[in-house]
Length: 432
Image: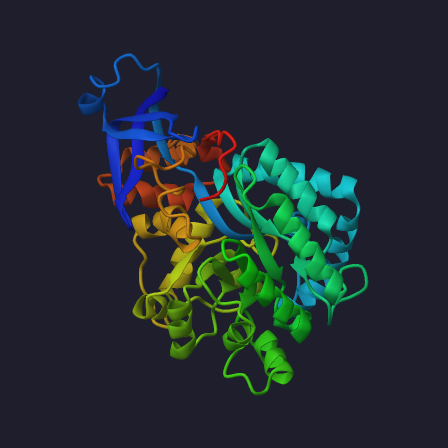
């Protein structure tokens, strides 16, 4: 068992942040050997109970839950910052050519090593990631995540049509490979598998049907894809499935909407789509830096709250422009404020932070496992330095409330704030 004395940020309820200015976080093994939070609260209240526990004192720092990234493309590490006129040209000119390189195991492993290190450097301790259509890319990423004890969910991309040679897969073999990868990786240590159709235009009906059948056979695996990101993409889907009520309903048709199904973007929805998200238990990965960069549109927070479906934040690297959760939270604030394409609102700092921690975990079906520091949660956390830059130190010193402190970190923060990311050791326990 070990304790940490510092300012400690956690959530007492969804979206309700608490900051213990002189707090104690106690970490120790549970009955299954997982390192979990045993206690959190004020130092004065807890210290007598844990007087014999070795304690690390971190004055001037803030311990907070590790960030949860709901949608990121590990093969697009080197695509980040590539100019394009929009989503489809960007895929054609940059993404697909680069992803061809991941047929090589050595190249996949080198990128995976850098990618996992970059996640941790930015304080991301749980992620839902796309690989490429090559099984080698999945194996490399899972092995590196396992080495670092990162809680990672990932999958081989399915794309058997409307894609160039080198990334296009064969329908039957792609489904055989997916099932083999599920059996190899899902539930091993802290790893999970996600069935990963890239998006409707690049998957044949036979491939989508096979993906749905695998999802039915393995109900505890995740599903991930994209939906309603871009108007040109939606028009393409309408040509392919003219009888479908909407883009989202195509996934429903093939059995790909259910709990643990995560769809990136979800921008161009109507109320029927939002109701379908809620009734199916599917969740949205909101990708604000990507949506702003590619000019795709703005996620409708008011509509999502009205319908009551789950959502959380995501970097969407490489369409997204940063690994940093602080950049993502700030972009989400901008997206919320936009009020011409949809109703505008000002998201509170604790709501933004929740969307990238406990809210994202809940959307992934991992509530109470990651994304918070309540007792029983896995002890993944970050140590933040609110004096990491001169301007940030000046601003945070003037914060008169928790909202002001969190918003200063969101607006002025980046990877320099992350002094350390602490990953709990799973001890061989699988995903719950």
